Length: 459
Image 1: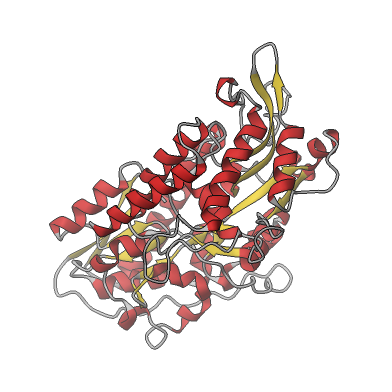
Image 2: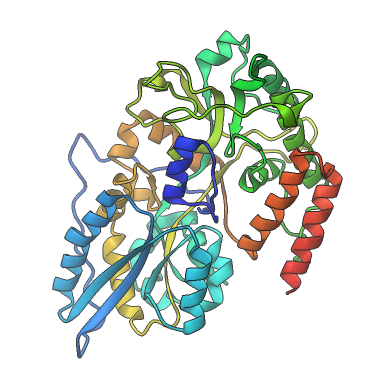
């Protein structure tokens, strides 16, 4: 959602996201193990089938770190092959660029990888083509499943398990407290629309010599347009908005939807000033947009960043002494159903219905998703494990990641269950792009989204 993984890492450098992934809120992390002793290892699950002949279990993964792939190939797969004589595990690495064409090709042909790496919203998109895995992964077959909590909803379709979630990667509001104070803002992260618009106007700076931004009060996913569709969804959900009406039709003509679109335009104009479309964007620095450029020693220019942890500074960066982490608070003054929100993404592994190796696929998932292995998988990426009992060690040892996990548990709202997500993304980006260039009013932008998305669902 589809902007993803290392496309997101490039966003950290370029401060621009073409995303798609990610999830549902996870319960509060369990207490870390006593002292420094690691938790006792659990035994790998026993094989549920013994192939009569050589079998290749094919797994398709998207944009993982080299450390992740090395660990899977050097540790998980050899153990699995040892426990399952005659089985070879084959991992193919793909990219989130062009994922929809690749996945559609697999399902149209009725053959391909047994296990496929999907993003948050794809349970709805590909659900009919995924295997019902309850008989293999349900609690009666695998008691460990109870440790996943609500994050598991992201890996279901029509109430049936289709695979397992790997991690949760929510969107937070990261703010430079020192830049806030220097700009005369002393009340912390804004907590309603009026405060955000005032904040954007006061803390954004434009160099008159170049007519370009030198400081941007808020970078919401996409620094330039400030009109990313996932940012829109985060704001919308914070107002208590629902994407669909009770009859299943789109809800972009709701008061919450109009307020969200108006807010995006207001923030854009407050940041760039009256001549919003004539002002240059914030220059691209090295590292996170809220960090300091090591080459120049100067701030990269953003006061606040609304994004996942991937776009924030690395945890060992000294700038963290000056960075706060908060949810987005909505607009309770005007919308009583407002609530603090972090929009949570969950990547997950699904089993294709065409796979002749469903039991084997379940066995591999059980091995890769033990408490210890889900912990290790996420440690290679510094992300929050989907298993609640795997949230120990590096998660609780890092003040930043511990805070993120707690906020995700308390305020997480899932990025799942979106019908025709790829089409919705295209429809929204077109309308929101015209909104910020003032080709469309907020009312016209919403009407366009409502009409086109309704037609897309009807098809």
